[in-house]
Length: 59
Image (cartoon, rainbow, N blue to C red; front, side):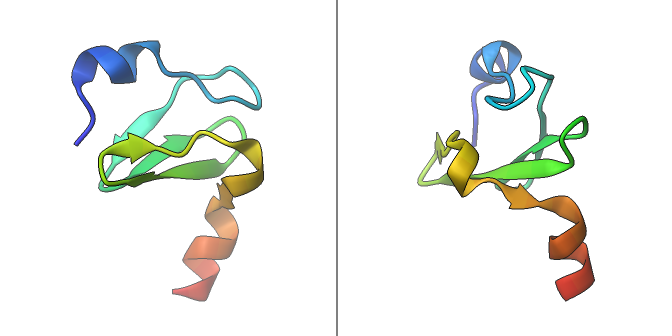
């Protein structure tokens, strides 16, 4: 789980927009991408971002 203080200062590395926490993901609604959280650490690398649309189409 991400601490609220950390969530408040984190921004999307691609567009610098706000991120929303949902389960083990940080979601950027501007870019329509999300970043995984592994072992409590957000993986905030643009190359590691996943596309929201592809994720929902695959499920």
